[in-house]
Amino acid sequence: MPVITGFDKLASVPEEQITENIRRRVISGKQGTMVSWRIKAGARAAAHKHPHEQFVWMITGTMEFRIDDKKRTMKPGDIAVIPGGIEHEAYFPEDSELIDFFAPVREDFLTVAPPSYMVER
Image (tube, rainbow, N blue to C red; front, side):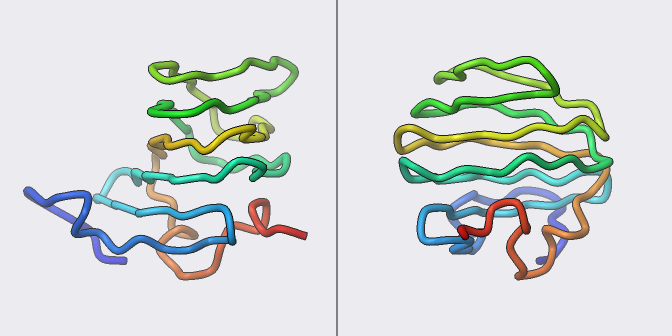
């Protein structure tokens, strides 16, 4: 995945099929990574943590979200900030779209391998 500078369109970024229920577009700059997710009902991101600070913005649908010991149902327009190193997990009861921003760059997202916590078992 190339680092983008200047202007572009989200639609021009290739969409990756992560699992049967999860698709993403990864956009990276030099200081951070943005991910546009399209997630089908029933998908989940298992409990995990990473050193990156993460910002979450719900666009459509709902997400049952746990950050550390706090749980919320996120709906369109809701935001969350997850400090690096804090465990979190998500379940999507309906089709959803969201935007994540990570700092620093998610080097692991710049490969084609799906995140282990999203692999359906």
